[in-house]
Image 1 (cartoon, rainbow, N blue to C red):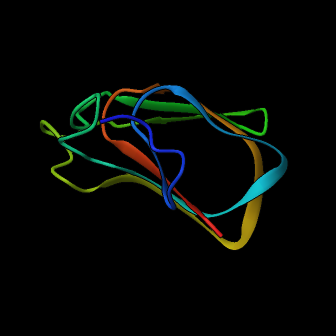
Image 2: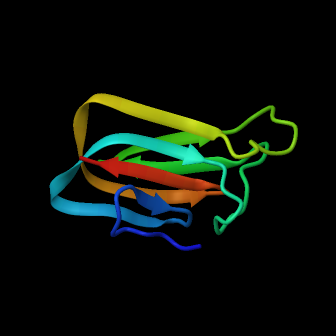
Length: 103
């Protein structure tokens, strides 16, 4: 699969610029989920999601799973009030798909 930056939610399964908007995009929720059809395959032990949001580096590492997440959510964040994201760059996504729900 490839990144889909035209839908809601946005789908990212390969490294790249996901959001680059001068006026920003309001985001309500983000999830990194195990996805057999993702470019990197499933999320397994020791895999990473590394992204920069509005210039701030965020690193998520999956540790202590037997073999894989098995279709589950590896990481999630929900904002009570939508957050304006001007830039979101995925530097590393070892497996799975990152979903970004816009408002």
